[in-house]
Length: 360
Image (cartoon, rainbow, N blue to C red; front, side):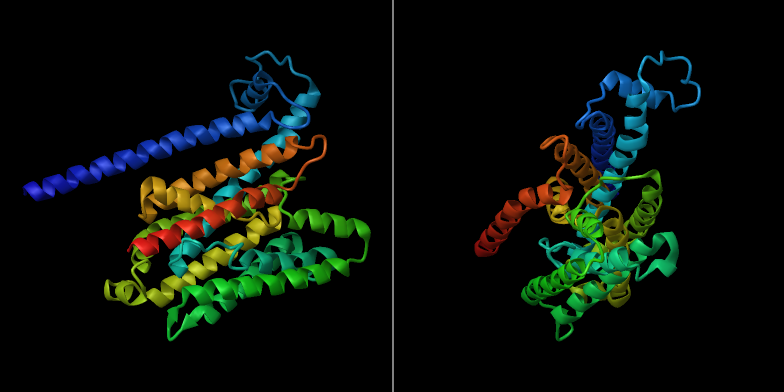
C-alpha cells in the first residue's frame, strides 16, 4: 500500500513537472511569435503589433486606439503573421519527424535530412513544380508529390539498412547518405532542365529552405497533418519507448513491431512531404531539437514529443527572423542558416556518442 502511494506521488510530481515545462514553453512560443512578427527589413513597433492583433479579437475592436498606419497592418496581417505561424508549424513538424525517425531506427543521429528523406521529397516536388508533372492532383499537387518522394526514399533506406531482419546502424547512415546524394543529383538534373530562368531561380531558392511568400492557405494542410500525427504518436508513446530496446524485446513486451514501424514510416513520410512542400528543405532541425529535448526531459516519448514540437517551432521562427534581417532588404533562405548551425552540432554529436560508447 505504501509502495503504491509512493508510485502515485512520484507520477503526480512527474506529471506536474512536465505540465509546468509545457506551460513555460507555450508562453515562450507565444512571446516569440509576437516579437518575430515585428522583426524584418521594415520593423513594426511591438505596441502596433499588439494593437493590430488585439483588434482581430471580437470585443477588442474599437476599444483600443487604432493609431497605426495601414502599411503596418498589411505587413503584420498579410506578410508576417502567416509566415511566423507557418514557421512555427514547420519547425514543430520537423522536430516531430526527427523524434519519429530516431525511434524507428533507434539512433539519435537520424533525421529526414541525413537519411535522405528530405532530398527524396525535394526531388519529386521539384519535378512537379517545374514541369507540372502532378498538376492533375489539384492545389495539393506539391504536397502529394513531396509525400511520394519522401515515402519512396524512406522505404528504400529502411530496406537497405536491414540485415537479417534487424537495422544495421552503420548501413543505415551510409545508405541514407548514398540515397541523399542520388536524389540531390536527380534534383540538380531536373533544375538544370528547367524551361525558364525564373522557374529555376524560384526552385533553387525554395530548395534551400524558405518561408518567403507564406500565405494562410499554406498553413491548413501542414497544421492538420501535424495535429493528427501528434495524436497518433502520443497514443503510441509506449511503443516508441519500447522500440528503443530493440525489435525482439519490444515484441516480447507486447508491441506489434512490424505494424508500428509501418505506421511510423507513413507518418514520417507524410509529415516530411507536406513540410517540404511549403518550406523546401530545412535541415538539422529534426536532429538538433530531439537531442536537446532528451537532455532536458529524458527519453520518455510522452514528454519528448510535445517538448520537441514546441522547441522546434521556437527555433525555426527565430532563425527565420534572423534570415530576414542579416542581409536586409534581401533575405537568406532559412535552410542555409540551419545548416550552418546544424553542421558543427552534428560533428559534436558524433564525438559525444563516440565518447559515450568508449566509456561503456
